[in-house]
Image (cartoon, rainbow, N blue to C red; front, side, top):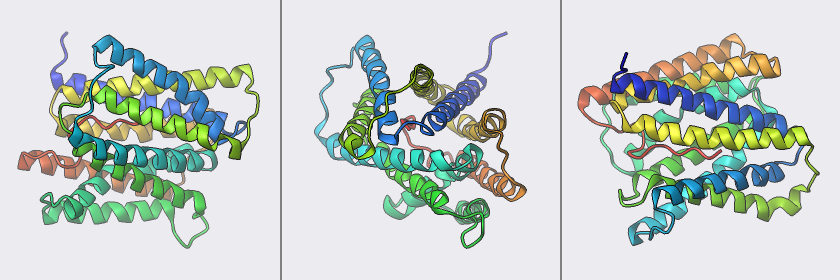
Length: 302
């Protein structure tokens, strides 16, 4: 039985989200015992090596950077670095599912910011959906209540950094291969870890920690490849909503690995965010536009 292009795209996206969530789980375990910057470096080196190997295999290892892309690539790398630092710091202290629920607001945030800064058109229906989705985020974060802390704020800040990253990605020309963008992202994050390493210290990693870091790197590269495959087959408005399966995987792994489950208010907030996000995807499909997701496959190097 041959799957349709949309079915293949949905499957690739779902498996990519599972790979990214497994990467997050491995890093959450590792950063409980290893300094954050050390974990970034140890994961970044094999990730960068794998991406360089992929670029070499595709014949784009020595690609020249178009002049128009250099500024946007630097801005994208800045967003990647800040997003990685804030995400991993929050992940270290927050339940996996709670942080994943906050990150589901990302497509809505990209749509709103693109409308404000890049003057991309947005109708009142999608604008309403974005504000309803933000109400869902407030249910998850709960500012001013006992469930709110600095780590929830860092999770929100991570979303802002990734919005910067994705908006910069939208400005890159089609001449720049996606794997080249990923190499710059992985290289900048790894270099940042190396620079900050003296401030966080170094703890000799145990064998099981090295295994977890290697697994995290493998899941990260697999997720990158799968999400590129997902965005290249099928209709984006049908494939993109399957990114929300990340929350299901986060809830499952949070329960199995960490013995944590989100409370009812967090689940309600997440349901609102996901519902409004899916609505915006289908509104864009009806309008014949692709505004909620970056034109290029969204590269996630966290």
